[in-house]
Amino acid sequence: MSAIVREQVDHPDWGTYAQRLLNPEERLWRNPSNGGHDDKAHPPIHPTKFSTGENNWSPDHKKVYELVVRHFLACCSQPAVGAETTVEVDIAGEQFNASGRVVLAKNYLDVYRYDSWGGSLLPTYTIGQQFVPTSLTLDSGVTRPPPLLAEADLLSCMDKAGIGTDATMHEHIKKLLDRCYATKDANSRFSPTNLGEALVMGYDEMGYELWKPYLRAMMEADMKSVSVGTKSKAQVLEGCLQQMKACFLDARANKVKLLDAMGTFFARSNRPINETQNTIEVVRPCGACNDSEMLLKRRPNGGFMVGCRGFPQCRNVVWLPGSLAEAAVTQQICPTCVPGPVYKIQFKFNRRDIPPSFDVDHLGCIGGCDDVLKELTEMSRFQHHNQTTTPARSQSQTQTTSTSGVRQGAPRQDLPTGSRSTGQFANQHTPAVNPQGRGQSQTPSAVGVRQGTPRQDLHTVFRTASQFANEQQTPGVNPQGFRSTHTGLTQNSRNASSSGAGQVLCTTCGEACINRTANTEANRGRKFYKCQNPGCGFFVWEDELDNVAPRGRGRGSRGGGRQASASAGRRGGGRGRRGRGNTDADGMTFISATGDTVHGCCFTCGDPSHFANACPNRGR
Image 1: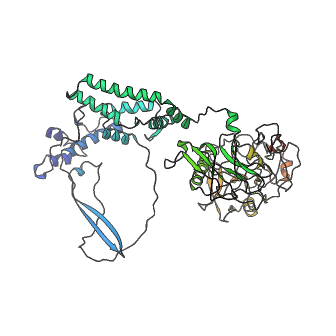
Image 2: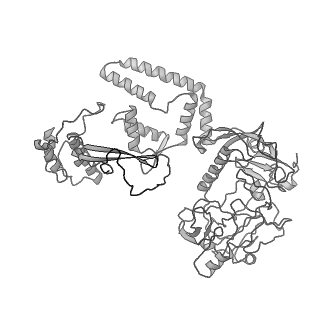
Image 3: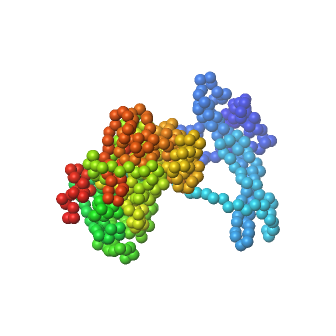
């Protein structure tokens, strides 16, 4: 042992410590201990030859050699010695405690720089001593979820659970990756795949904890027993086969649970499309029009909503969480919510889309008394904002599409520059965003809810007519992931931009906006303005400051030209495509918020040949 240490005396980095280790006067030497366990896979790792680094060694090679040598020298050294002080303090009846540690003898820490020991220094106190604190601070903090497992963490967990040896652990991990149970990113951190999570859920529902290390650890222990001679190979093999056969037969008998788990994570449904899209159940009387019922319906994109039967005259609607997999109205009546009766709904959520603290099955109410449903709705909307992206387009062709369901050529009523429609979204201060590149005509989204309509407590969102009928339309998204709704900038903001003052004011709180550069795939390098207030959602592209005036249909110039006003939209040169527009009896114009063509269909029966106001099935 000392001969190996003596070889390291001439090394420029740790040679001095090796000399101290061999000096009896230093009293630093200690024979290495046996360690926690011996897997008998190989002898203890130690330097077999002295080297200061060969010419062909890579930096990683040198680091590995340094780790091996320093670890070996540390194993031959005395442990570090320290003193710890703990103080308990009473301040105005509140109990506080503090601890500090002082290292008296570093010993192995002098060479093994990968460990650190010590703490804050505390003065010497006596019991009952009084003192005046130098400062009193209240630090704020937030909780964060634990990070994903790194490869080193996984190896440590496997070692503690008794799975594999140093020679076989990496083979186990490779199988997890090859079978697509998990993926490994560039930082060597593992993330479970849908297949991996589905298998865990399916076997867990069967009552088997196959995803836990117990069964594998038991097999490893049996194999070690064979190596030391306490068990025979035939005995261990027979026991393992019996265990696995019992699991296999039971899993085959309960394969439906595994299929259900697969359907949860891979969004598979065996129901016909017509059945999934035409389920209608009465939930409650409509509190907006007081004339019709609110119906539970499945949207064309597979989600659920509760909307008024009187659509399009009444556009009262409650959007349910996007994490919802199934929903059915029950006969139970909520005793709290009015106007009644309000029937409770049996919800079934996708496990992968909700936090673990929430149950997959939930009996809830949409009247506003259900806090669980409120939380899941808010989470679903936040996730949707972060995941929705719209690819940029290279063309400058203007496409303004009516969302009112009126055919092309209907009379158009332009909204005056800087004005807003009478209907408003719940978040009405976010300006228009064109996610499809420069040179496109921007058209405001005037929503079809009159002022004075009672607001639903359950995050009720009022949409335009085509949004109510065509939920597959992709909303515009700004670089921060917020859904953009068109309301236009204030006149001060437009004047500041056009006059070259360089200042854009927030339409919500009046603060000066800050200029940022987008880093999303669709708009990388494009500049935009956002409110400097973190709680405000104000956002607008820099190149569209003079292009946000509300207007109806128009022709956009091809090649990046801008339209300065609503009337200029009619005279735009180049090839364009007229959109559909309509003005209802109250003077509200319904137009597309994204500029994309929307093919309307009947909200009641789904037939694209007509709209809900002319549906022959209306009122049935």
